[in-house]
Structures are given as C-alpha cells and as structure tokens.
Image (cartoon, rainbow, N blue to C red):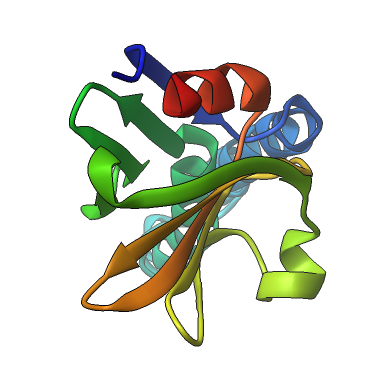
Length: 165
C-alpha cells in the first residue's frame, strides 16, 4: 500500500525571480502611463488611453499572474495517483493497481515535450512541468496500452518512495 503523499509544486524559484519583477513592472508601468495622461493630458485622452492601454496591460499582465499562481498538485493515496495543473481543471488520475513501473529521470521539457505546463505526446505520454529537470515517470496500463505520466518535482525521491511502497 503506497504511503500518502501530497505536494503542491510551484514554478522554480529561478522563474519566480523573473516573473515577480515582470509583473510589478507591468502594473507600475500601466499606472504611470495613466498618471501621466491624467496629470498632463485632458480628460478625453485619459479615457481613450485607458480604453486602449487597459486591455493591452491586462493581456500582458494576466498570463504573467496566472503563471505566477500556477501549481502542479500531486497526491498519492492507497488507491489513486492524481496530478492536477491548478488553477485549471486539467488533471490525470492513475489507479495505483495499474502502475507497472515508476522511476526518477532527468527531462528537458522544452526539448523533449515542446514546453512547460501540461504537454501531451503521442502514445499517451503526458508531462506536467512548471520548470526543473528532475521528474518521476510512471508507466501504467490503460485500455490495454502502456502509457506514461511524467511530473517534474523538487521532491522526486519522496514521490517515488510513496508510489513504490
């Protein structure tokens, strides 16, 4: 029976050091542009600027904020291995009894899977990654086919121990 394991993996600290200042620059830049228009322009140009720059600022800041908040939720209990990309409803569930093999490996998300987040490859190979290279891959059977579920995590050894016990 697997040990219980729960972990919420955030984007790597290196990525957070980049995203935090980027988000601040976006919000402060928009605020300064609006302040300058308000102070030195007439009210008509302020409204037009807000109508134009507001959606642009939102289109740039929203994806950055979402990436900042994203988590890969990993949960293992005695019957199910569950991985979810939060705040999205994307998740994978693998019954423990269908797991054939589990191992730690190094992955290159951009090179091997084409990026980060949730990535699907042919023949049922799925990656959940918010950065990092150490990953746990689980091979399991579903509908008569062998599939792989790979999750990058800083706690790869603990996850493997929970899946292997």
